Image (cartoon, rainbow, N blue to C red; front, side, top):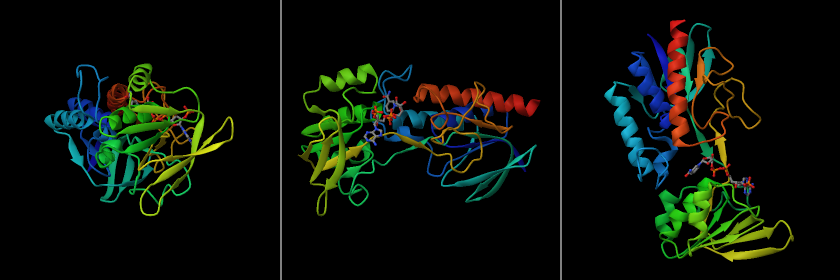
Length: 301
Ligand code: NAP
């Protein structure tokens, strides 16, 4: 059996591609190495997806899935993709569940949070070092936590953590945040959130669990210790694109044109794992729709 479309990745981009491809009556399957939803399922508050004034990422992901299933999208979870063989007219997607032959592929595999590279970070992972405030924030009720980074992830998660922690200290390597202005305003006006500017976390220490971090000011080269029980790291994203051989930028994000076509005929991309000026649910959804329509036209032609 040869599918029309194999969608790899079950976040907003992949599920939207699923909805559009099924409505085009294509024989499509979506596969995900974990479950559907993608990274948004660990986002506590979403307030910039049009039509939803305030919702949680998990709730929105559930609605996307329900919508895709309504049109009969086949979904395979806990299936890992290791490679894609280009046979010209068809592609063979190599998975932990066997090979799947298809006319087109849409890659919507998103990204994984990056490690900071601080001393003892990996040793103390799960023992105070975390990459997911929604998952672990609860353990830090009435405690002091450090958040590393200055992008939207760091700032929105700092705001989330401030709901339960006693104090949130954001350590950022510059004196300006990268995050959206509205997120910045929310953080600056939150009395529980403090900032340590121009500084990097060099070391995380603790015998069994995190006890403190050593922070160096990059302008003065002085170091200080911050007593904390939790360190939440949000220093950017690594694209999940290692399994596919298409043109990428120096960081591994897939390069595509405005039709979401990659450098290989019949392989399309959508969402956070591509080179894009904005990584949001709204843009991922738009990419997914375009990728599915492009796949449909490719098959017709
Ligand atoms: P990001 O925008 O790439 O920000 C990463 C942050 O980490 C930057 O502030 C960067 O500093 C800092 N950083 C990178 N490497 C570092 C290092 N080695 N040491 C210390 N700091 C380091 O990543 P993100 O915040 O995960 O966001 C990814 C995308 O998702 C963005 O497009 C973002 O807008 C989107 N997003 C949106 C929302 C929302 O609510 N709208 C929420 C989450 C994510 P510099 O600023 O100095 O480069």
